[in-house]
Length: 70
Image (cartoon, rainbow, N blue to C red; front, side, top):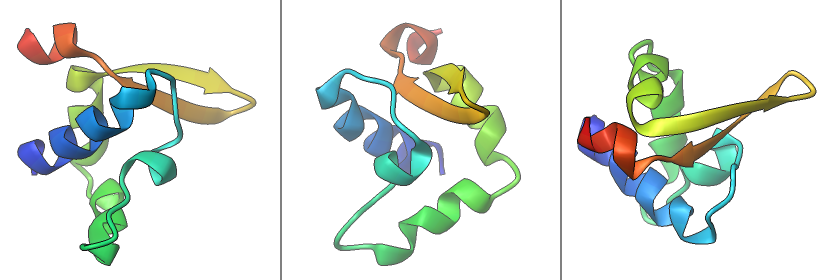
């Protein structure tokens, strides 16, 4: 699951901005990929590879190469 998560985060990072997960974990070839965000381990993994912002009680994420390398 780690490599799947990284794939979507890295692809979304090309825009270099914080985004909600529903705009990050999308795939035209694998329409059910959004089910990944519902897995219990998913939030733990996000903290290891992303920066997070909360605006109006909604969370936004951006891939962090530095955190991933740690």
